Length: 373
Image (cartoon, rainbow, N blue to C red; front, top):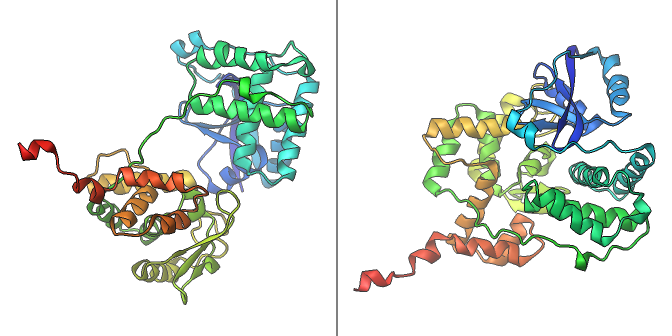
């Protein structure tokens, strides 16, 4: 593996970050995500990692033996002037607090939390502790969390979901690392927006799935829709998870670390057989440019964008829209909600019931009083 990574340093989302710029390489992306929980910044069109004391050494130790060259850029990351004006630069954490965050991360790993959750909770906790950088952790109280919600989250107009993430991270951190109870009843949580799922019509889905001439792309999108898969569930499928004799797809360790099975369409099975003959996947059912590496999530999102453009559909559809459409179309076909709940892997029936609000079949039964005038 030969590539050059250009390093730049800047504040991003009120945290010190290292931006990594390099030629697109699926294997390298997979590595830096694994080593440093790298994330993609749409604003800066670059991968970035938290600028902690050990992260740069970890990248060098893992990547340089593979022939990857790390160089530091003289150019700072450009920041929008309006963004810079409103940005509050928080102080860096001292070594003791950084060690506490490491302990928290180790605890979550030992409990088998997903790397995504670990990254989210760690980032949220780091911002909170940087906000109170001058205050010992042992002296932080319930009221400090309320002040943080008002003076930081609400003042910066950050999202309700971020506020919930911070509260969840703080609660777990104090319970596990500090062995200290936080009275969460006194901490303000935002009300969740009750948004309806976005659904495509069957005609639109058909246009999208048939738009691409690439058999791998058609197989991936078709499998997401026909089985109601999440993006991550598709990308973690292995060839052995396709049970062609029983007509099932086995989804292992999905959200909530649960396995489930879903029926496999005969038409999709034929498509998969055709794809398999040309691709010969080794480890993952859908692999990237490098054999043995799973297909990249951003690349799959781009596949959908290209299919939307070819199909002439201007809706801002995402991969999750296909999952929502699957559930809604099942309901419109008369499938019982209890079965849909099992197929989607929902823990609570109330999560599945939201599809009753967008089912066209149910809405068409309602006659407007205007029609009876």
